[in-house]
Structure formats: C-alpha cells, structure tokens
Length: 265
Image (cartoon, rainbow, N blue to C red):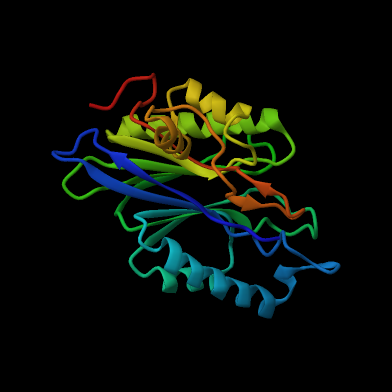
C-alpha cells in the first residue's frame, strides 16, 4: 500500500499581537503490523520495516520537517522505529497514544496508534478513550505553547474504515475532548487532524463543521476558486488505499471555539 501525506497551512490570529502562522501536517505511515508481505506481515521482518522506516523518516524530514507540528496515524510502537523519526526530526518532541487491545493477526498486544511530533513545548497531552472507541482506537490531544502567545491544542485521530456511524461518533468524541482541553488550558486555537477514512462531504466531516469547525483545506480551496470562505470541495488525492484507489480522506480542521461553543478571546 502506498500512502501519501496531506497537509495544510493554518493562519491563527485569535490572540496574537500580530498574525502568526501555525504549520500542521498529518501523515498515515502504514504500520508494519498492517502491511501484508505475501502470507506474512512486514512487522515480522526487521530488515523490511526498518528499510521502509528509514525511507519514510527521510521523506518526512524533507517534505514536512518545517512544520511546527506533525501528526502521525498508524504509528508503530517499536523503539527502533521511534528512534528513526526522532533522529530525522531533532527539533521536534514526541508524544503518543497506543491503541488498546489485542491484535487479531497473532493475539499480541496492539503495536499501533497515534503520535505527535512538535517543535512547540508540550504543556499537556491526553489519550481520548471514550466508550465509542470500542475497537481500541483512541484520539490524542496535546496542548502546545507558542512563544509570546497563548497555547494551542492539536488533536489527531484515525477513524475506522468500514463503519460510518463509528467514524462520526469517534470524530465527535475527539472534537469534544479537544474543546475541553482548549477551555481548560485557555487555548487560542484548536486543531483536529488525521486519517478520517472518508471525504469532506461525509458524515464525520460534516458533523465537525456543524459544531463550528472549519475544514482548512476545503476552505482554502473554495476561497481560491471563488474568493469565498468555508464550504466543502474535493481536496485532491491525499491517500492511496491498498486497492490502489485514490482517496481524499486526510483532513485538518480548526476552530477558535472551546467546550460549550464559546469563542476564544
């Protein structure tokens, strides 16, 4: 399976003395546990996954390394994998959330999950483990401190592939957790990004827009097309599935609202 990155540049002006730019990237790395190699898994062959890990870490450093925050889905919980990316991104610091439960392929503890690499100092992080995450998935929410400004909250998620209702429930749970943390930590901007496994017009994405979040890439594309703001449009290929299909399923949402719908001031 070949994965491509999705990224968007966000302009945050909520509380700064002058406009500041926050650069966010999101990338599904394809966990070696989930990558088939013949009748086996890539994770069973150290040489294979280490070689791909080196290539991916190099790509991330070259293509996304300038971003303030890089969010990863299908992060591989293996010390040597982590070391590859930490060496490639020496200016960033890492926080993670591991998926709960047992892997169906071999009965071992799950080794996949989420990761956030940030240039900004980490104030707090939390794994979202609401009842709707009955498949062991979680969200990861981090409060990050910008120099001379109020903090920002960045959250990431990887929504399930086959269940639209579960995607919508999990996206809402992640958004709610991020909003709560933003209110608690007096954040000026809140971001939720990741692999949503659906396009911008599907229920999970529309549900976030309905609660006051903006799909940043969709808004930017629409504005470029008609000088308007907001709205939903096809974002181009951000992801290729194992079938080879080109998908537009990686998204970056942002809001200046906190829990209860209040705006940051």
